[in-house]
Length: 339
Image (cartoon, rainbow, N blue to C red):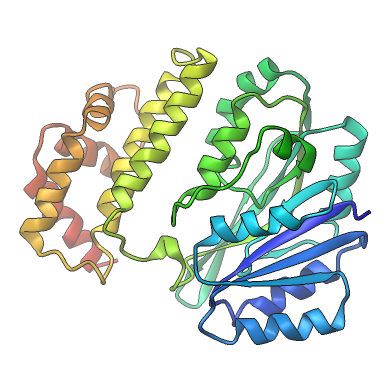
């Protein structure tokens, strides 16, 4: 029996795939299987996967028509034999001790999930910025321990993603946790389902994963007509999760910030080059966003005296709160023109 199943969805990542796979095969811990799920790639990704499959018998290669990373991960879960599950994205890379050190912690503390640190590697023209995201080591043994710590972990940016976590497969199977068919945000919703009743969570303060931010053809860096709706549904899932814990008063400010972030994501989406809307249509979209009940409520609860954000952020929310969409729109367009 293998101890860990590493599942990697693969779609049009020929420029990054070698780096990803060699990083996994070079892990200091060797008792794992690597499940590559080729999700209908149109580039050379399939051939690259086949080449590695011939070299290492730990690799299992699955081919499917393009269905999205959630469906690809589910295919991997269906055949996984490991005691623990680790999900990796094909365009990122990991430290050589990721599997070993987090596996040992999971075994030591009998954890249903281990959360570890990662580093955002942000592409800015020909340069990279690095932002580490980590938390102090801690065992959250009970459901209440996890729920009390959730706000801090969420605000530190480690709760959305799947690739900074090691999951116990029996726990996933016991609750039948699987990914949905969302094309964007399926990681987050998968995790929110898991968080509802989870206990025995270990927080590892080490940084093991390098997330590439800003890849041009990544799903998060393209215009999507349904971007705002998908992000709205994510935020609604978070609110439902917190309400199910009866923590809505404790995490009131967290939820306000989450709804404001959803508004920001929706507006940012309108400024991708591929967006077909003209200026008037974009402004009407922004009006539609700020008139959603949850967004309107979040804007209403902003306290500018308590708000520690920059002047630009305060001005943005002041204009949107007061429905000065045209002024906000042209200020934003002016700013982007010089960025």
